[in-house]
Image (tube, rainbow, N blue to C red):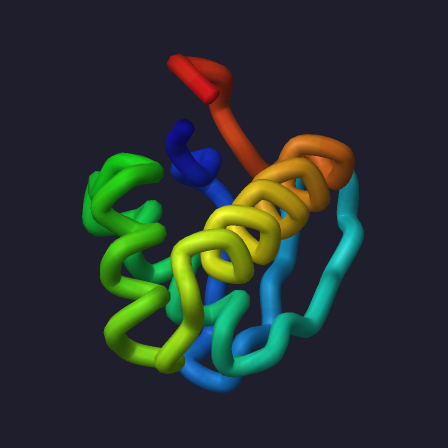
Length: 83
């Protein structure tokens, strides 16, 4: 899954989608995931990094990541490759 190329993401977690004109704010974890997606990291790598960075167990990291990715899709912030 990739973030759309035209999506603007600030250092503080502010997101702007020029396609829809919508804007969003994300917390530190959301910003972390967005940065990893923009770097081209895959879901499994992001999940492992989440566990290390935020001291999460595997189940919590997977649930948090899946919920966040679903939210990104619902707000049309992603390009579909493989979920």
